Length: 117
Image (cartoon, rainbow, N blue to C red; front, side, top):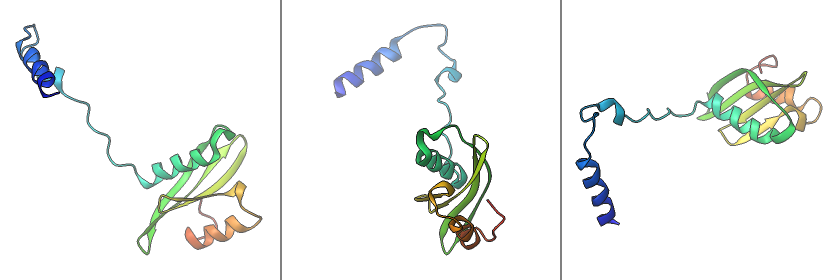
């Protein structure tokens, strides 16, 4: 393995070409930054709804409560608007899977008021 790596490095050093001093050709793309809580929540909600259709997200708000990150928001599926809550990037609650009134209570408790999300 080391011999193969050394051979590749030697071959790369021995190559001659027009770009001998072109540093931009060797620049790697910058690594993506860490995922925001809202982006993580959207990814988790998409995974939860699966093949249930295209979803458009809106109204995401993230906050911390007792050291736990909570993201509240909404997504549109077709003409229906559904709310979601993601707690600590692990627990996903989506309105279609909850009983009547449960999401309103959860939004009031975790998101600060019944109107958000």
